[in-house]
Amino acid sequence: MRDLCGDGVTSFSSGNCSVHWAFVLALLGVLDAAILATLAFVLGNRQDALLPEDTKDVTGFLLSA
Image (cartoon, rainbow, N blue to C red; front, side, top):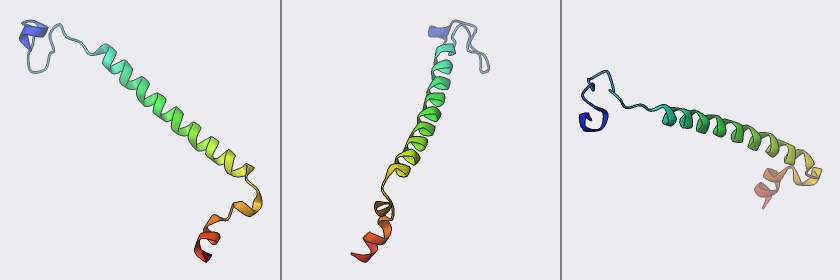
């Protein structure tokens, strides 16, 4: 670590190194995952509402077969 970040590296200090971009990208990844999960849930429910009435009860069809 001292070779990469300088002599100011201690147990609680990273010296001249930083993780600014990694932190920002991690936050953007979490935000993106939350948005995509919400979008998938909303669009999945909307598609279910567009199905004809006779195709909505698939479990009864599968159990009778």
